[in-house]
Image (tube, rainbow, N blue to C red; front, side, top):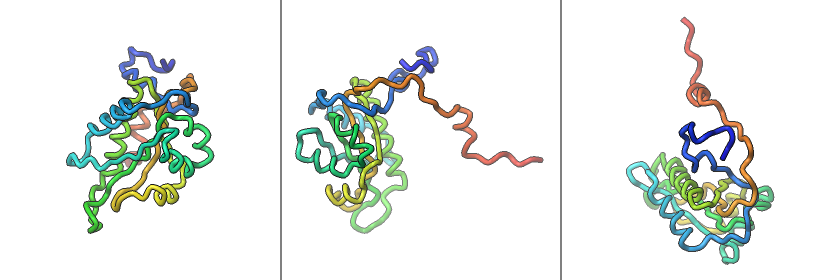
Length: 188
């Protein structure tokens, strides 16, 4: 348990104990049932107009598609992400069809909701998730060739963490969350 948060503070342990590991145990596989539950959690996320504008490309070590994703990771993320039992490429759909009409200005936000659900489900199952954008977006897009209107946003490494949560992770004070985006009130 993180020492800066106690259960009495009211934050759910799945949230308080979540961290993004920089090492995964490569001997722990993510089986089909686990993958199905992670996707099911994402499926139940809220979205604007119930549009569910998210998609996932999944691959595990030993599968042919794994190397297709790994070859596009930046060295900084490849050092630790390749040990994860599962890599998930996240995509969002912003267009209705080939007409090019905007699908949803909330598509990326909605994708974030589904990834958050997946992350909490992983935590509940004893797994950890590390989301990242350190990869060659153009190269990965060319490699995977998403359907028209679909855009790759990020990659998630999921698996059993091989490192311990940090003792303390600084977080901005709650007061900053409420005041930082707003200019000071005018003086009278």
